[in-house]
Amino acid sequence: MFDAKKVKQQMVTWISDYFQKNGSPETKAVIGISGGKDSSIVAALCAEALGKDRVFGVLIPHGDQHDIDVAYDLCKTLGIAYAEINIKEPAQALYDKIEMAGLQLNNIAVFNTPARIRMAALYAVSGIIGGRVANTGNLSEKWVGYSTKYGDSAGDFSPLADLTVTEVKAIGRELGLAPKFIDKTPIDGLCGKTDEDNLGFTYAVLDRYIREGVCDDENVKEKINRLHKMSQHKINPMPVFRLSE
Image 1: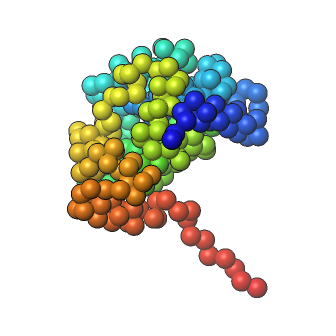
Image 2: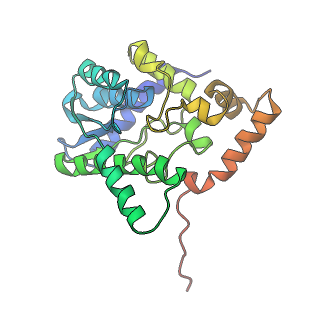
């Protein structure tokens, strides 16, 4: 049985320890705030571990974001400082340069490039204010490779990487966050579809398979296994050639 109260306190301690070893008393946690559960919960954990004055939120819409008000509400609820950086123009400028070079854009480039620009923005802010960038990915997403390498999969510390979506939500409730920050339908803000639409199965089904090894639908089980196998290049560290003696 997942003990959310116990794990939440362990996570707060872990974050505090990380910053004691990797910064000064002024070093801030820099978090890309989407208004979704993962970034909201990481921000709340950091605020509890470090104090709200050492947490900085960065809202990074790609053009118009219909639910950006939730991200603003989260920052105001936690009392953290924040800034908004819209990446639509930088992304389009890069696309234009790529096409001027004679290359044809495809869905892989169009869907992944904004995630990498978002991470570049987070590290720029981190360099300006003196911070460490939080990775907000969870185990469920990582398991099936639902992330962008060097985009939302990057960061300096990762509080949620070993927790499923179900467990992450339990932590959010333990933190006392409002349901709108925990149960908001997950969407990447780029392709217009929900995460579960893109995956083809629910997080509840995926989480059960990860933790219990049970999946009632053989087709879904096969798809999860296939995605997990295909995602090893994202999950594992970069292979490094070692010089032999």
